[in-house]
Length: 617
Image (cartoon, rainbow, N blue to C red; front, side, top):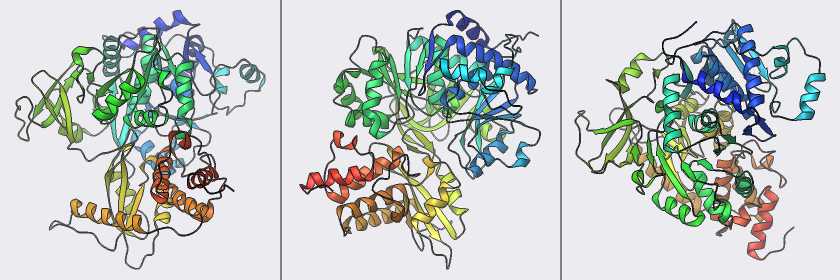
C-alpha cells in the first residue's frame, strides 16, 4: 500500500536504524539505545497487528514509567496510530471521562491505574504496563527471558512473544499523530488533534532554528502527557538522532542533584518552565559552573510567561543564554522564538515567528499598527487539525488557516512579539495550564457545596496558584481539608486549589455572575486576617500546622518523620507553599542550603530552632 503524501516519520525511523549503538534515552533506571528502541518498535508493530489496530485508531497511554511512554509513543507514531497520552496521576473519575472522550481502540495503563469502568473497556484492548521495566539492564533482560510468559503478561513482558517486524503499515501525513486534552475534569473534554504533518513541521523548525544534530543531549524532565514534555524531549531527540535525558523527577530537595546530573551527563540543552528556572536560580546558584561548559548551548524556557528580570538574572548567574519561546498545544509546541541567534533576540519578548505568520487584530478583526495590543492570530504548518470531534469549537478559533490564540500581544516595528495578557481564562501554575472551570466544576459536584468560583493568584516562584472560593449548601458543614480531600479523589493533584476559602455568600452582578474584583478583594482581606493570627504552641506544633495547611491534610495525620514519600499531598508545588508558610510563620528567610535539607518535618523543626538559637530536639 502506498500513500500520496507519506508521513515523514517513516523516513526518520529508517534513519535511526543506522545508529543502533547510540544512546537514545537516559531515564531514572538506566539507559536505552537506539538499537533496543528499534527492536521494541518492531515487536510492538507485531503486537499492534495482533490487537487488531490499524492506522488512525486511537490508543490511550498513561504510565509513570517515562521509558514505557516514550517507547509506546514512538511505536504508535511509526504505525500511524493516534496516541492519546493521559496523566498517570489522574483520578478514576477524571481518567474515565477522558477515556470516554478519546473513544480509543486500545489502552496501555500502569498496573496500579484502576478506575476505568468496565463498560468503557468493552470492545477495547487493555494492556497493563509493568513500571520501570524497559530500560537497558543486562540482569533484568536475563530475568525477563527466564520468566515464563503468562497469557495475560503485562507490557513489556508480552513483547517476548512478538517476533519483530519491519512491515509497518503505510499512512498519510494528514493522519492524526496524537491528541492531547487541554481540559475536561468536569466540562466537556477538549482534545487538540495534531497530524503527522503538523508534528514534522514543528520538528523541522526546531532542528533548523536550534541547529540540532546527533550530538544534542536534551535534558527535559517535564511531564510526558503535556506537549512540552514529549515533543521537546523524546520526539525531538529522536528526530535529530540525539539523546533525551530524563534521569529524575524534579523536586525542590533535589535541585542540587539535578544540577549535578546536568553537568555529569554533558547536557547540550535544558528545556524548562519559568518556575523551574526560578528554583534553579534560588536554590542552585552555587552550581554556577553547571552550564559553563563547551558542550552546553542554551536553555529553552517554555509554557509560561518569563519575567524579564528572572531572565536576565539567570543568564548573568549561570553564564548561559535563555531562549524564550511561545506556543500553545494547538500549535504543537512553539511558534515564536526569542533567540538563540541575535536576529530573533530581544529581552522581554517572545522573539519572532519561525515557519509561521503572526498578526494582531482588534475585536472587530481589523489589523492593528505596530505596538498596539490586540489578539494574536497565527498561521503555519504547525497549526492543529482541530479539536477532536468538536467542529463548532474548531470553527470558533480557525479562519482561513489562521488560529485565534486568545492571547493579547503587540508586534513592534521590527517584528518582535510581546505577550501582554490573556483573553483565555487559564491559570499557569508550575508550567501547567489549569482551567478554572475544571476546578470549579469539580468543587460544585461535591455534596454539600452550593457554588464555587476559581481564579489564579500570583505566587513566586510558580507564576500563579489556584485559589477557590466555596459556598456551602444551606445547613452543610464543610472544612477546607474535607474539600481538598474530596477534590484529590476526583481530579489530578496539579489542579488542587492551593487556597480554599469558605464564604456564606459572594458578590454577584445583575446577571448572577460573580464579581471577580470583589471576590479577589475578599480573599485578600481573609489572607491579611490569617497572617495576623499568630499560631500558639511549640515550634513543632506550628510547623505541623503550616504543613497541614500546605498539604491539605489533618494535622493529626502528620508525624515529624513525615516526608514527600509518605505524605500524599506533599508535591513540589505544595512544598513551595510549605516553605513560604514557614518563612511567614516564623518571620525568617530560609537559605538555599536550608531548603535542600528539608526532607522531613523534623528537618524543618531543627532548622527553625537553629535559626532561633534554640536547642534542637
